[in-house]
Image (tube, one colour):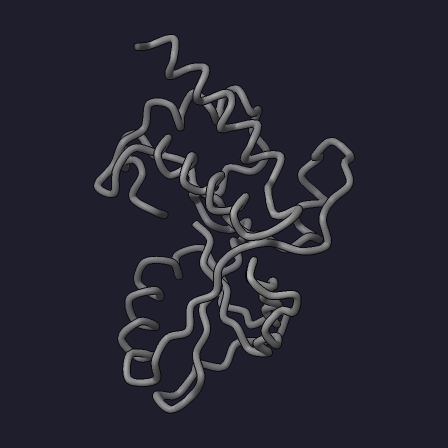
Length: 180
């Protein structure tokens, strides 16, 4: 990834979307997806698995007249504990096509930093599922966020699902079925 240089109002501006998303409260924080550098992830003691070499998500083209407004909003929402980086975004081919659109060479993404006080590091899936099953915030239920994330990831193309997300969704569904 490249070092950040802020876009100007005339630049082509693309934002990589991924999931603090207001799915909890300061007293009872929810859990959301945070992208982190692979080198940091490898220090967390995760069980060895085949780690994917790509991250699936959506990229949004922001019209030049809205770049400053969108950048200001995102900096306020995301900058506490994240670094801005730019990367190449590789769109997948739409279902009706056999070829993908060309890559976008400068797509902004917020990367989580271990210095973020909200970054919890490695947690057991059971503990995370319990929090997600019960947390609610201004943007809605944390479980709703998780289920929508799972569906969105699976819809991006072959191999785009994430086994951590799928596992959490199953655990949360089970926990919620016990409380009905």
